[in-house]
Length: 300
Image (cartoon, rainbow, N blue to C red; front, side):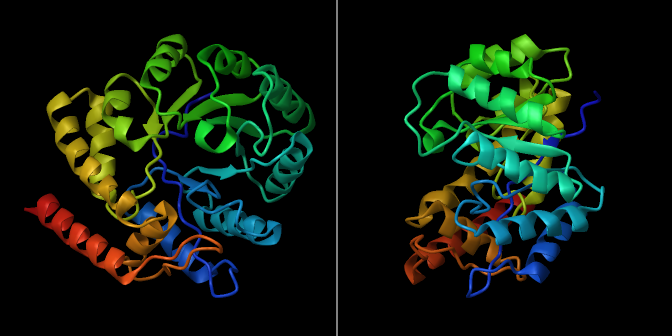
């Protein structure tokens, strides 16, 4: 397998209207904005895309629109995670019917995990009953299970498990896996943006930054210099990306701060799905000031 899901692959927001239906026009514009500004792929219906807040119909619609709009120009990975193995299989089958090729799968959540073996069985069963590629999504803050390097290595041996998006924030474990998979076709994607600089310099295939559509240049530069092994310039752009990440805690909800920041692009709404805490006027003002500073720093 040739690696093709590499680079900056943002987990895009899902713009919605007052009925929490997908804003198709806004989503299509967001996708084209990403592609036009050099972003390398799209992750639709991830945590940042409020996948579990959308109805099943709207979740499927967001995925279908993304596949249609990308039209093979950049790879699409789609969140198919859910609360049981059978629900994930059903999600993936619908994704496959749309022409999707790579499904992102977590351990199940809203469950009391007894063992790591559960997740191995989870992926084995999914692999037996679906046909697309599977990407492991290690995000213990939402699944209450932190996958060990040993478990991830076992999962990588399952048919069509092709990569990892690691949002555990555990750089020690990520480094162990980089060493293990070096020279193979297994994809290693960093899901914690604050770890993008060391991850890229040490051989990661890419990273998954939520705010990349707002400041694509900074994120693409970090990736390019990191892959080239240029420490000085990777650190330079990494500092700017770290400053961009300061937007996240500027609202009580990271989803609200991200969607408001994205609304400054001019074609998506800041609206979040209920019951997420909406952004306040004071929080908006802080984010506006931060965006203005960042633009000055980036182009000065």
